[in-house]
Image (cartoon, rainbow, N blue to C red; front, side, top):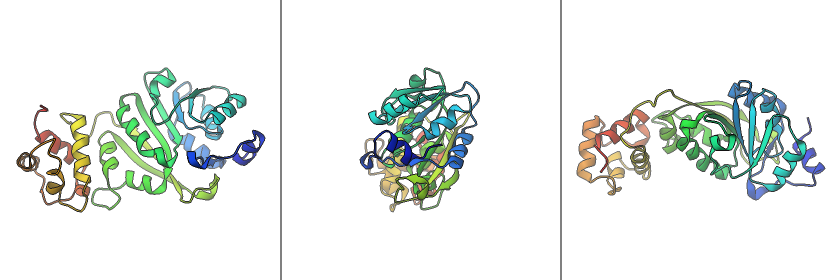
Length: 275
């Protein structure tokens, strides 16, 4: 298999630093990422930012139906010229694409080596589109994966840990050293797998309100939970927050990073019906 450097040279291209392009060409790593999806023959899978098509080839080799969504026109041209069997190339923005619509399927698996600056946007898309996403495997900045997979009470535990954790199992699979990429990024990467749960870990009255409650709680991490929440007056009054915390059995002196997804869900439910 040609290296990223060789393919770029053959097409007269260079990696675009402003696009966050760092191409993974290590065969064993690519095989492991494709294997982590456990794709079935004929299953639709959407690859976000396929770049030069290195991972794309391993995905296609499983017999899955691959839809490669790429924004960079130069990379789209490369992929079209490479004409990998079983792969359909779609020009689109990974941060805004509707995964299932792009693949023309009711449910898809999603995979990608994500540019660091688009990570949060794409993870929120996975959250929003979770009814159509059975699972996702992403290569991200190592520190981001550590945060996503963090346990409550740790410094890494945060907003996306809670939000995704209500609906997905989150697994930190393995680390990828920077030297495996071309050009090498300044930090190591890691691979995370999100597997959608059959049912959420806990029910909520309003998903939108749940997200806003969690965001408010983490907006001022050093403050107690009650002091962070009461700054968000558009959801409830301080008195209503105090009552909701009591109803949910949560000590208002705790901090946001100590609460599980289930406890945040209980707090959201305790706020009562949505007006």
